[in-house]
Length: 328
Image (tube, rainbow, N blue to C red; front, side, top):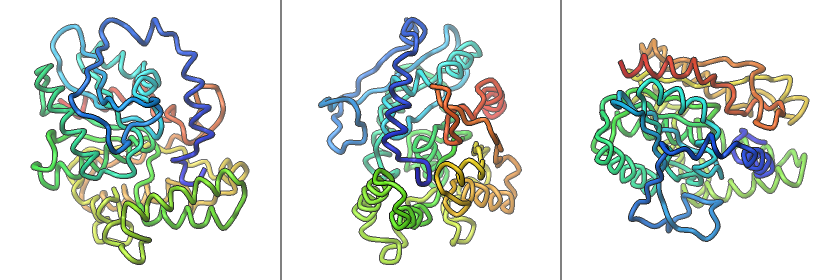
């Protein structure tokens, strides 16, 4: 799965495995579903049949809300599954007074005006309804969710007029971060022609990027740079510079042996290449709270399958401790 973001087959396995989750654990009385008075006309939320309803889930603690954790879903991952897959983190967060919020967004290509507008509407509803502290927010997610979380946070710290909230910290679980490198990674996938599914996936997302950004990176490099979380060929990493004072974690399982053996993928096409470069650039800018969390060998899918691109590389208890430190 090139850049380990968009594989439909893997995601279907991922989704099906979550159907086995004990509903009595997940759909408890404390978790609330709030519908928003807007319709999904741009397909930022898919895998929900013909529905055009947009909403968010919230799990508030029993007592005082001491902080807010926003978890953004990965590609194709419905909000219910995003909650189920973060059940332990959401549960221990609630026990420590932190509310968890999961919005219904899982298929935007980038943090464009539609995506950022939806998140702003969602967050306004959350904070008006729950009266939670707006200065104690951490945002994160897996894969696409991590991309969205990082770019939203960059927008917030570039100019607070862009966003409804200004996250105190952000994390991403194995997110691609550089759209230009991602584009050429898909080009290499198509040329390798290792499988029909991989080629189809690559071509599909090459088309999406060219449609979203106006053409390829040679024609409109500025568009790819604008929407990227990080740009290796730009001074101070492009948009990464807006995180120079923000705690950020990128979790990764950089198992090159697994990639070579199972995907015919080398370091040029692993997310860790850009992730480590981004964290290194932030270190050079003086951000001593920018962390690359090396979770080598810890990637396990919910069905027990070994896969480096997995949510399991972020251990919930340790992640919560970091969240608590960030919102102190």
